[in-house]
Image 1 (tube, rainbow, N blue to C red):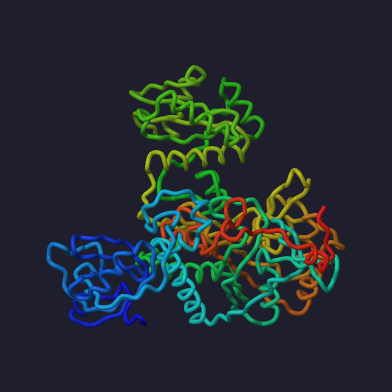
Image 2: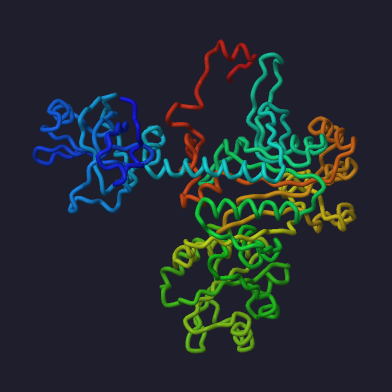
Length: 584
């Protein structure tokens, strides 16, 4: 029996109509002479009823049905009795009285129930992912993902972009995460790499004259994983010629506005605000601030620059930072709780955590005895202190003080339930440092990537003070998640070679890794820039999921294993021999 309707579309408009439904047995109930089954497909659930007076053969067959059996039923749509109406189901006012049953496939007992309320380990879910994907929530997630693809493509087609695919087998140019390498059978000892991004290809497409390019593309990085990372991930890749930062930011903002409106009916306020990297780091402790709640970081160097407390004074004298966050709920924090926060601060890298409690115009806490009356007054003004305030202070290097307080701020935001989960707070972070110093490699590395252009009025700094140069880069952040990042690119060979020189990439190495791009820049490369959206992370936010694994059909575990099919797996000696590879 071929279905005529899905389990999600029948309602009282179809009363007395003969229908055929196909699907899985979701629930089975015997109510004294009548058998009720909730039949499920990806569109919804419909109740079907087996009555021996309607068809005794179908009724007897239904007695043997169990969860996840695949069946086809033919019958007529009938109104449910008023007392049996289920308002939680779209089809809750009707049921189908079965006249014929066909069992298409019997199912073994599943290792877990197919419903959204199950509490089961993720390892089991991933091992039986094809069963996990039957759950309504995951089916909704992947349907949203499909809709995102459609909206993105239509948006860029309407904006006159060309969708172009770039290769998966490319030259290895390791400058960042590790490449996944693919051995070449035809060229023994030589390897392709899977792309970490299509960065060089999309720049070549700009040189080729395709001034507006996009693709939805798989990328691969062999790096340590966490909640929002996978070895293979999907990004919306965009590049444009004859543009500046604001052009890329504008079209990206409009895409986001369209996605959130069409998927969630949520209106993103335009223009999306901008914040400089330094302001973000010194106020929120990172470059992807969650703006759904307060608890800003305050710098206290001006309060303690002449302090008698040696710890604070020595940090300031060594060009470090004394900074604090204020929690206006001191009574919620016992001494034990403050000790736990101190341990967390140490785990985040701080040497310790000082604290003060301000109440009834008095200070108490670990460093109160070191404070002068003048410092107390200045603290009250600087922090705008109110009664029942807890002040948490970190004194360390510039990077450490702000980053530790930033992580504590997020912990407190969750613990005190300060984050409004109904809100989406968007912000563009701009004015990033171009470079950062890598102690292990004893050289500067590109903060974004080595093709990012410095600000045009700061080119001299590459020679004199490279650490001061700012990048023409921009990240889009929502609720503490970076969902997109991009930059204006270097489009002249001389400047690109200068950047390689600053990064201590020799001429020989640059030629070996990027010679094709350097050569292409000599043939009339236009000014260009672009951006890449993390599609997995974006869908995670749109669906309210906790992990990107819940929005990817067949994800890997946090250790990059595929528990369902056993990848990565061993291969035969014959395969290795063909590739001229030996395993040590």
